Image (cartoon, rainbow, N blue to C red; front, side, top):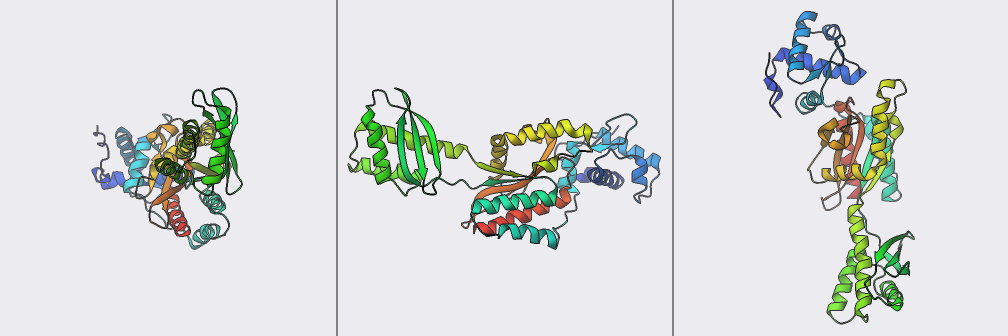
Length: 351
């Protein structure tokens, strides 16, 4: 019996015969979604008998690279096998001229950045037959007006009107013994003195004016303003914006046995916060991230894969992430370079 591959072991631990059989099994499975038998491999040009191929496939199964869903069925790659294939054997195919043109047309369509990002995600979804996802750069609202509405003795509703007309509100805990007049005073001060600033800029100016004795506020109003601005800053940091397009692509009406996996995946997509956090982790890397199945606990039940790449702003810093979510049997060789090209196109847009 062969020894299993060591974690992270290179593909060279396999013989050339085993590599050939393994590659054909994976490529056939990714194309059909069905377990692959020895007869199928024999018909693909290998100069091996079906019996020899079965022996090699058995060896690959013992190594943990292939699995057999049923005793009489063919074999399919495990998540370990897919990882080995993606990292060591995959022949990536550059996007076609038509695919590049479709992506660039959406990127350069004009209009607000968010619309371009959503359109690009939709294009990527259509081309890859997966769900397209894009993590939007965090943008702090610019203050136009800010006020407090009392809810109870200990809480108030902080209402922010942004320069773009958006209105948001948050519940703020009030300092003990705060007089009602402090709510009006704090709101007037923010609207008059801090309008036109981002939240961080407003916090910095408030600290500076207090330090220089220029803030004509009593202590209670100062604390209230600080709390009101802080709750937005913390919330903005914790809420990356995720755009998902093409989730319907994940539903294959012919794959009845796959419907439970798809249902789980759609539930996971609905909980955008968790996926946003997963993508946010890709912001820390220099390049492509590929999460296969249970490599990430978020997709341990649905058996899904994520391909994601960061895109950059004009200063070269990573500002967001673009990618796709699909089944583990997606066409990695085609989709990986497509996601990479999309990230490069978005980087040019943000420059």
